[in-house]
Amino acid sequence: MIRSMTAFGNARAESPQGSVSIEFRTVNSRFLDVSFRLPDELRMAEGPIREQLGLVIKRGKVEIRANYARPESQGATALDLHYLTQIASQLEVARQYLPDVAAPRLSELLNNSSGQNAATTDSQTWLALCAQATTQALAELLAAREREGRRLADMMLACASDIGTIVNQVEADLPALLAEHHDKIASKLRDALTAASPDGFAQISGAELTARIAQEASLFSLRIDVAEELSRLRSHITELEHLLGATSSSASQGKKAQGSGSVGKRLDFLFQEMNREANTLGSKASAISVTRAAIDLKLLIEQMREQAQNIE
Image (cartoon, rainbow, N blue to C red; front, side, top):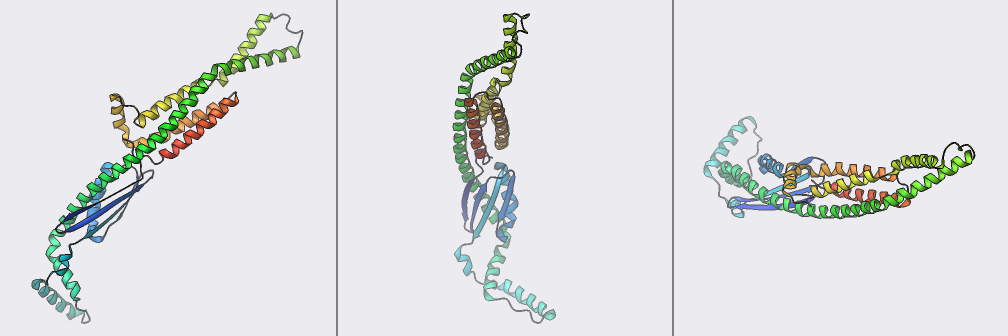
Protein backbone atom coordinates (compact mmCIF):
# COMPACT_ATOMS: atom_id res chain seq x y z
CA MET A 1 0.00 0.00 0.00
CA ILE A 2 1.38 3.41 -1.04
CA ARG A 3 1.27 5.93 1.79
CA SER A 4 2.02 9.62 1.87
CA MET A 5 4.09 11.04 4.71
CA THR A 6 1.79 14.08 5.04
CA ALA A 7 -1.36 13.48 7.07
CA PHE A 8 -3.25 14.27 10.27
CA GLY A 9 -5.14 12.13 12.76
CA ASN A 10 -6.70 12.78 16.16
CA ALA A 11 -8.92 11.02 18.66
CA ARG A 12 -10.42 11.41 22.13
CA ALA A 13 -10.86 8.68 24.77
CA GLU A 14 -13.11 9.18 27.80
CA SER A 15 -13.79 7.46 31.10
CA PRO A 16 -15.46 8.45 34.40
CA GLN A 17 -12.01 9.52 35.67
CA GLY A 18 -11.35 11.91 32.78
CA SER A 19 -10.55 12.16 29.07
CA VAL A 20 -7.44 12.21 26.87
CA SER A 21 -7.09 13.85 23.45
CA ILE A 22 -4.22 12.94 21.12
CA GLU A 23 -3.33 14.26 17.67
CA PHE A 24 -0.66 13.20 15.16
CA ARG A 25 0.75 15.48 12.47
CA THR A 26 3.18 14.02 9.94
CA VAL A 27 5.23 15.55 7.12
CA ASN A 28 7.92 14.14 4.85
CA SER A 29 11.38 13.29 6.16
CA ARG A 30 14.10 10.86 5.10
CA PHE A 31 13.90 9.04 8.44
CA LEU A 32 11.45 8.59 11.32
CA ASP A 33 11.65 11.74 13.45
CA VAL A 34 9.24 11.85 16.41
CA SER A 35 8.62 14.81 18.75
CA PHE A 36 6.21 14.93 21.72
CA ARG A 37 4.27 17.76 23.33
CA LEU A 38 2.76 16.18 26.44
CA PRO A 39 1.71 17.57 29.82
CA ASP A 40 3.73 16.28 32.76
CA GLU A 41 0.83 14.10 33.89
CA LEU A 42 1.01 12.12 30.61
CA ARG A 43 4.79 11.80 30.32
CA MET A 44 4.64 8.14 31.39
CA ALA A 45 2.66 7.43 28.19
CA GLU A 46 5.45 8.60 25.86
CA GLY A 47 7.09 5.18 25.64
CA PRO A 48 3.89 3.21 24.86
CA ILE A 49 2.81 5.84 22.29
CA ARG A 50 6.20 5.70 20.59
CA GLU A 51 5.99 1.90 20.50
CA GLN A 52 2.52 1.95 18.93
CA LEU A 53 3.65 4.52 16.39
CA GLY A 54 6.72 2.52 15.39
CA LEU A 55 4.57 -0.46 14.45
CA VAL A 56 2.78 1.42 11.66
CA ILE A 57 4.96 4.42 10.69
CA LYS A 58 8.42 3.90 9.16
CA ARG A 59 9.35 7.31 7.73
CA GLY A 60 8.35 10.92 8.28
CA LYS A 61 8.53 13.75 10.78
CA VAL A 62 5.83 13.11 13.40
CA GLU A 63 4.55 15.66 15.93
CA ILE A 64 2.43 14.24 18.76
CA ARG A 65 0.28 16.41 21.02
CA ALA A 66 -1.79 15.17 23.95
CA ASN A 67 -4.00 16.77 26.58
CA TYR A 68 -6.12 15.45 29.41
CA ALA A 69 -9.07 16.69 31.44
CA ARG A 70 -10.75 15.58 34.66
CA PRO A 71 -14.50 15.80 35.20
CA GLU A 72 -15.70 19.13 36.58
CA SER A 73 -17.18 17.39 39.64
CA GLN A 74 -13.71 16.42 40.83
CA GLY A 75 -12.87 20.04 41.43
CA ALA A 76 -15.41 20.25 44.28
CA THR A 77 -13.92 17.41 46.33
CA ALA A 78 -14.14 17.96 50.11
CA LEU A 79 -10.99 18.08 52.20
CA ASP A 80 -9.69 14.73 53.44
CA LEU A 81 -9.22 15.18 57.20
CA HIS A 82 -6.56 12.49 57.39
CA TYR A 83 -4.66 14.19 54.57
CA LEU A 84 -5.11 17.58 56.29
CA THR A 85 -3.67 16.18 59.55
CA GLN A 86 -0.63 14.87 57.72
CA ILE A 87 -0.01 18.23 56.05
CA ALA A 88 -0.27 20.05 59.42
CA SER A 89 2.19 17.66 61.02
CA GLN A 90 4.68 18.01 58.17
CA LEU A 91 4.34 21.78 58.19
CA GLU A 92 5.09 21.88 61.94
CA VAL A 93 8.27 19.83 61.45
CA ALA A 94 9.36 22.03 58.54
CA ARG A 95 8.91 25.22 60.56
CA GLN A 96 11.26 23.91 63.24
CA TYR A 97 14.05 24.33 60.67
CA LEU A 98 12.53 26.94 58.35
CA PRO A 99 10.28 29.25 60.41
CA ASP A 100 9.25 31.26 57.35
CA VAL A 101 7.67 28.34 55.44
CA ALA A 102 4.19 29.48 54.32
CA ALA A 103 1.07 27.39 54.78
CA PRO A 104 -0.47 25.95 51.60
CA ARG A 105 -3.44 27.74 50.05
CA LEU A 106 -6.93 26.27 50.26
CA SER A 107 -7.10 25.62 46.49
CA GLU A 108 -3.86 23.65 46.71
CA LEU A 109 -5.23 21.62 49.62
CA LEU A 110 -8.42 20.85 47.68
CA ASN A 111 -6.56 19.80 44.52
CA ASN A 112 -3.98 17.75 46.37
CA SER A 113 -6.60 16.14 48.56
CA SER A 114 -8.49 14.84 45.53
CA GLY A 115 -5.24 13.95 43.82
CA GLN A 116 -4.04 12.04 46.90
CA ASN A 117 -7.10 9.82 46.76
CA ALA A 118 -6.65 9.13 43.04
CA ALA A 119 -2.85 8.92 42.97
CA THR A 120 -2.78 5.16 42.91
CA THR A 121 -5.25 4.94 40.00
CA ASP A 122 -4.33 8.01 37.90
CA SER A 123 -1.32 6.43 36.19
CA GLN A 124 -3.12 3.32 34.96
CA THR A 125 -6.21 5.32 34.01
CA TRP A 126 -4.25 7.80 31.88
CA LEU A 127 -2.16 5.05 30.28
CA ALA A 128 -5.27 3.13 29.27
CA LEU A 129 -6.91 6.27 27.87
CA CYS A 130 -3.73 7.23 26.01
CA ALA A 131 -3.51 3.76 24.45
CA GLN A 132 -7.14 3.90 23.36
CA ALA A 133 -6.84 7.40 21.89
CA THR A 134 -3.54 6.53 20.20
CA THR A 135 -5.05 3.48 18.49
CA GLN A 136 -7.96 5.52 17.14
CA ALA A 137 -5.79 8.48 16.08
CA LEU A 138 -3.28 6.23 14.30
CA ALA A 139 -6.09 4.49 12.42
CA GLU A 140 -7.33 7.90 11.21
CA LEU A 141 -3.76 8.96 10.37
CA LEU A 142 -3.07 5.82 8.33
CA ALA A 143 -6.33 6.19 6.41
CA ALA A 144 -5.39 9.78 5.53
CA ARG A 145 -1.86 8.72 4.51
CA GLU A 146 -3.23 5.99 2.27
CA ARG A 147 -5.74 8.33 0.59
CA GLU A 148 -3.03 10.89 -0.13
CA GLY A 149 -0.63 8.12 -1.18
CA ARG A 150 -3.16 6.86 -3.71
CA ARG A 151 -3.45 10.37 -5.19
CA LEU A 152 0.33 10.65 -5.45
CA ALA A 153 0.53 7.21 -7.05
CA ASP A 154 -2.13 8.15 -9.62
CA MET A 155 -0.18 11.29 -10.54
CA MET A 156 3.04 9.30 -10.99
CA LEU A 157 1.27 6.62 -13.02
CA ALA A 158 -0.09 9.33 -15.32
CA CYS A 159 3.47 10.60 -15.83
CA ALA A 160 4.66 7.03 -16.42
CA SER A 161 1.98 6.62 -19.09
CA ASP A 162 3.24 9.78 -20.84
CA ILE A 163 6.80 8.43 -20.66
CA GLY A 164 5.62 5.17 -22.24
CA THR A 165 4.00 7.12 -25.07
CA ILE A 166 7.25 9.02 -25.74
CA VAL A 167 9.30 5.79 -25.67
CA ASN A 168 6.90 4.12 -28.11
CA GLN A 169 7.09 7.09 -30.47
CA VAL A 170 10.89 7.23 -30.45
CA GLU A 171 11.06 3.47 -30.95
CA ALA A 172 8.66 3.67 -33.91
CA ASP A 173 10.73 6.46 -35.51
CA LEU A 174 14.08 4.81 -34.79
CA PRO A 175 14.45 2.60 -37.94
CA ALA A 176 13.76 5.54 -40.24
CA LEU A 177 16.12 7.79 -38.28
CA LEU A 178 18.92 5.21 -38.39
CA ALA A 179 18.44 4.58 -42.12
CA GLU A 180 18.44 8.30 -42.86
CA HIS A 181 21.55 8.84 -40.78
CA HIS A 182 23.22 5.81 -42.35
CA ASP A 183 22.66 7.22 -45.87
CA LYS A 184 23.82 10.65 -44.79
CA ILE A 185 27.08 9.34 -43.30
CA ALA A 186 27.72 7.06 -46.29
CA SER A 187 27.24 9.96 -48.70
CA LYS A 188 29.59 12.21 -46.72
CA LEU A 189 32.27 9.50 -46.55
CA ARG A 190 32.03 8.82 -50.29
CA ASP A 191 32.28 12.51 -51.12
CA ALA A 192 35.24 12.93 -48.77
CA LEU A 193 37.13 9.98 -50.30
CA THR A 194 36.47 11.12 -53.83
CA ALA A 195 37.58 14.66 -53.08
CA ALA A 196 40.77 13.45 -51.40
CA SER A 197 41.87 11.15 -54.23
CA PRO A 198 39.69 11.05 -57.29
CA ASP A 199 42.02 8.56 -59.08
CA GLY A 200 43.52 6.81 -56.06
CA PHE A 201 40.98 4.07 -55.69
CA ALA A 202 41.18 2.49 -59.14
CA GLN A 203 42.46 -0.75 -57.68
CA ILE A 204 39.38 -1.03 -55.44
CA SER A 205 36.14 -2.06 -57.07
CA GLY A 206 33.07 0.06 -56.64
CA ALA A 207 31.30 -2.70 -54.77
CA GLU A 208 34.17 -3.11 -52.31
CA LEU A 209 34.42 0.62 -51.74
CA THR A 210 30.70 0.85 -51.14
CA ALA A 211 30.88 -2.07 -48.71
CA ARG A 212 33.64 -0.41 -46.72
CA ILE A 213 31.74 2.87 -46.58
CA ALA A 214 28.62 1.03 -45.46
CA GLN A 215 30.63 -0.72 -42.75
CA GLU A 216 31.94 2.56 -41.36
CA ALA A 217 28.47 4.07 -41.47
CA SER A 218 27.04 1.05 -39.65
CA LEU A 219 29.66 1.31 -36.92
CA PHE A 220 28.78 4.94 -36.39
CA SER A 221 25.09 4.11 -36.39
CA LEU A 222 25.68 1.72 -33.50
CA ARG A 223 26.88 4.66 -31.42
CA ILE A 224 23.62 6.51 -32.01
CA ASP A 225 21.32 3.50 -31.63
CA VAL A 226 19.13 4.14 -28.56
CA ALA A 227 17.15 0.89 -28.64
CA GLU A 228 18.85 -0.34 -25.47
CA GLU A 229 18.02 2.85 -23.58
CA LEU A 230 14.40 2.67 -24.72
CA SER A 231 14.19 -0.96 -23.60
CA ARG A 232 15.54 -0.09 -20.15
CA LEU A 233 13.12 2.83 -19.82
CA ARG A 234 10.24 0.51 -20.62
CA SER A 235 11.52 -1.94 -18.00
CA HIS A 236 11.71 0.86 -15.43
CA ILE A 237 8.11 1.84 -16.20
CA THR A 238 7.02 -1.75 -15.53
CA GLU A 239 8.86 -1.72 -12.18
CA LEU A 240 7.31 1.66 -11.32
CA GLU A 241 3.81 0.32 -11.96
CA HIS A 242 4.60 -2.66 -9.75
CA LEU A 243 5.84 -0.45 -6.90
CA LEU A 244 2.79 1.78 -7.13
CA GLY A 245 0.42 -1.19 -6.96
CA ALA A 246 -0.80 -1.10 -10.54
CA THR A 247 -0.13 -4.84 -10.95
CA SER A 248 -2.24 -7.34 -9.04
CA SER A 249 -0.81 -10.80 -9.65
CA SER A 250 -0.27 -12.98 -6.60
CA ALA A 251 3.50 -13.07 -7.16
CA SER A 252 3.62 -9.30 -7.35
CA GLN A 253 1.57 -8.98 -4.21
CA GLY A 254 3.94 -11.28 -2.31
CA LYS A 255 6.99 -9.37 -3.49
CA LYS A 256 5.38 -6.05 -2.66
CA ALA A 257 4.57 -7.20 0.86
CA GLN A 258 8.25 -7.95 1.46
CA GLY A 259 9.47 -4.47 0.49
CA SER A 260 6.48 -2.26 1.19
CA GLY A 261 8.24 -0.45 4.02
CA SER A 262 10.80 1.19 1.71
CA VAL A 263 8.74 2.13 -1.36
CA GLY A 264 9.79 5.79 -1.17
CA LYS A 265 13.51 4.94 -1.15
CA ARG A 266 13.10 2.40 -3.96
CA LEU A 267 11.29 5.02 -6.03
CA ASP A 268 14.15 7.48 -5.47
CA PHE A 269 16.63 4.94 -6.84
CA LEU A 270 14.35 4.02 -9.77
CA PHE A 271 14.00 7.65 -10.86
CA GLN A 272 17.78 8.08 -10.73
CA GLU A 273 18.11 5.18 -13.15
CA MET A 274 15.38 6.53 -15.42
CA ASN A 275 17.05 9.93 -15.48
CA ARG A 276 20.35 8.27 -16.42
CA GLU A 277 18.70 6.60 -19.42
CA ALA A 278 17.08 9.88 -20.48
CA ASN A 279 20.48 11.62 -20.32
CA THR A 280 22.06 8.88 -22.46
CA LEU A 281 19.20 9.15 -24.92
CA GLY A 282 19.83 12.88 -25.21
CA SER A 283 23.58 12.43 -25.69
CA LYS A 284 23.01 9.92 -28.51
CA ALA A 285 20.31 11.98 -30.21
CA SER A 286 20.85 12.17 -33.96
CA ALA A 287 17.64 14.08 -34.67
CA ILE A 288 15.89 17.04 -33.10
CA SER A 289 12.85 14.84 -32.38
CA VAL A 290 14.96 12.57 -30.15
CA THR A 291 16.46 15.57 -28.36
CA ARG A 292 12.98 16.90 -27.61
CA ALA A 293 11.88 13.46 -26.45
CA ALA A 294 14.84 13.29 -24.03
CA ILE A 295 13.96 16.71 -22.60
CA ASP A 296 10.30 15.74 -22.16
CA LEU A 297 11.36 12.51 -20.46
CA LYS A 298 13.55 14.36 -17.98
CA LEU A 299 10.74 16.79 -17.14
CA LEU A 300 8.30 13.94 -16.47
CA ILE A 301 10.86 12.02 -14.39
CA GLU A 302 11.52 15.14 -12.31
CA GLN A 303 7.78 15.57 -11.70
CA MET A 304 7.57 11.99 -10.45
CA ARG A 305 10.67 12.40 -8.29
CA GLU A 306 9.13 15.44 -6.57
CA GLN A 307 5.97 13.47 -5.80
CA ALA A 308 7.96 10.46 -4.58
CA GLN A 309 9.71 12.59 -1.95
CA ASN A 310 6.44 12.47 0.00
CA ILE A 311 6.00 8.68 -0.23
CA GLU A 312 6.78 6.64 2.90
